[in-house]
Image (tube, rainbow, N blue to C red; front, side, top):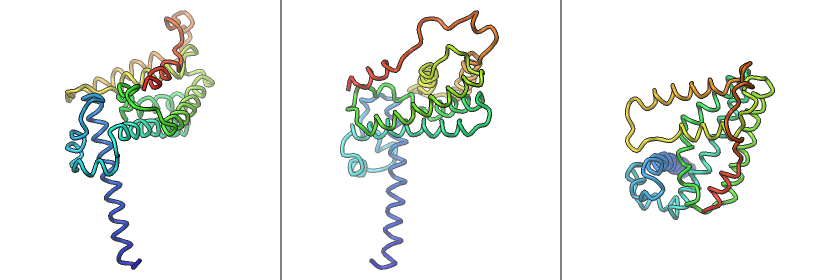
Amino acid sequence: MSTSERPRRRGRQAEAARNDLRLLAAAREVFTTQGADAPVSAVAERAGVGIASLYRRYGTKEELLQRLTVLAAEQYSEAARAALAVEDPWEGLCHYVRECVAFGPGSLAPIAGTVRFTEEMAEAGRRSDELAEQVVARAHRAGVLRADATTIDVFLVIEQFSRRPPVPTSEDANARERLVALVLDGLRARADNADFPLPGHAPTAERYDELWNAG
């Protein structure tokens, strides 16, 4: 291969990578606001690419949805690693929650049970869960996270606040930021936590297993 062909090939690869990022961003926006039943043509239109280009990258709609779930887990992992790099355990936990809410991966919860669960999805989820456990365990050891709050509680907070409304408004981000701050304040360890325990029983990971295994 000539030296002139190499730059062209690298250029095409870079363009393909950019198109893929646009597709994934568009797909997340479409499926999280319109639901898993949204047509892939809406994704292609949002991404500004042809439907043929989409199908060249993802042979089926299910493949696209599966890739989105892997990407969400990878983003959770990135947020957890960044949180563990923060010296203060409480600030690290807050960083993790805020970053994950900003990503919006919890908005993919409606996809659970609609696609076949793959080993790639399972492995990405395991890595993400292990890192999240480290973030929460560190906060517990430091005595800054209330003792009866679990990692699944943190996941549920993220899931609820990372959902996006079908018709967004300019005030959504502001309201979300305020509410997340209120919830984080409620998760913080205080001397009187024992006098006001969390109601009910601690949630378990079985909920997530049931959701995804339904597919």
